[in-house]
Image (cartoon, rainbow, N blue to C red; front, side, top):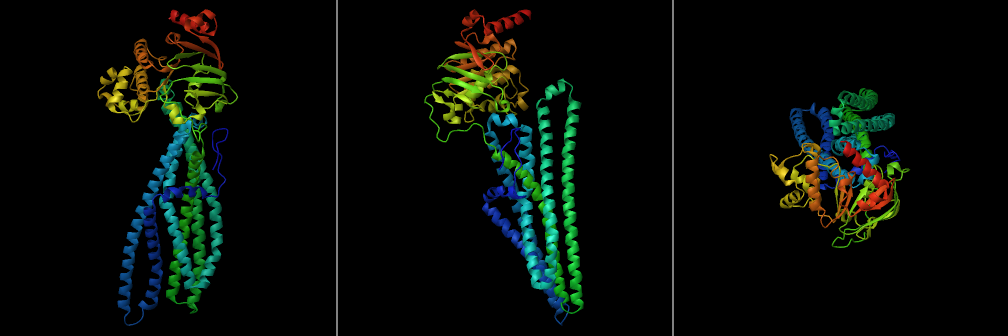
Length: 598
């Protein structure tokens, strides 16, 4: 396999050229019935084809002589019709079976890769662009579909044809066969060398396509900003340039594959012509019959055709190997945060306590910059604690560590008295509900967007959660109510409506610890009042940590932690902190003076 380097991209795998395709075998073996059907059809079609030259030899040597030549010819032509029927049925069965396998393998592979990607956590996506990941998940798996289906079966069929044809060539004429075999190294070695170049170019082409996809995903994801700033032409130009680079890489790959095919065909044809010239001299001298030479010619054509097709398939397999290699890199990536082998049980029922003890932390992408420096605090059951401080002080980092998106480099984080690193990940996160500043909504119904907080919830439970979040009124006013689709990122809703959907998710999750990250920062007065009423109901009997720049929203907190440069510099109630005249007082004075100026 390979491991991601410090730039977040995996290093190339040092493997033999087609070795990555071996990783597809477990996926193929999941469907033994279809594999057996494909093999039977493949062997049947190849075997039937290999009987044709024998029939042709007997027809030439015996069908054109003797009194019963007409009857003999009729039987052989009838037999050829039967062979054609068997060949047609076997080829159709092979086509269906191998393409079914290709589609099935790709579906299974995509599902597994996505499941693995979902488990890698935020740390992985700090250094890996989601657009590149999507390119691998779609374009690369499409490349693999051809290899897992038709390309592998064609390679196997042509290998059988080549082996059978070479065997029958030796049976027909050892002398001519020896001459033909002498030409094989001159054909095979150039193809193998060229195939390596095709694989390298294929990987480069896929990487260029991934870069273009990542750029498109970035800008289409921010389409409003792009349009508002009038960057449509500039963005389109840069994407066109990225596409051109991808096209240039694909063109180089196609040229290499075309060259591979041309070299293979020329070498095969030249060697066959030379062998046939020698065979014609044997017929003229009477050392070989015309029918036997015809039989040898057909087997030589079969062998040459099989080798030419193998060269073509080799290029396809090399291209698919490059795509498989890239997917293996994703599957080889390991999450920074993992559940312990034997996790400690969290207390039941949940307590709702949080404790930080001497926590030092720096994000993997900024290892030299500390986000938290020796942070220690405790939050008791049912307590509301506000986190206040300038941007970059470490407030959101505290939330990230509570949810165990990351582990601290020093110190510990405990939930309900159990160290987060020692608890089961799913059990720990089930006790925490997050209401983020920017709500993640999906192109689905409102019902399913709220149910995202707890997928097994009933419709009635979803509606109760929406009512608790004061979202039921605006939902009922929509044309299709809870069945209304939100569109991409929920852009059809206002900021306050999106925030109340997030609150409904938190209610539905029914977690003992509630994390509110700037839940009302971007709302107008009316929307903020509605969200604050919903928060008042939701925070009851829950341990709540609140991040807010608006100091008015934290005045009701039982305790306020003031952070600056990754450290807790002040702690107390709103009134206590104002009397101390420290950082909190300066923040409050600045904010209240701005409000007065407005």
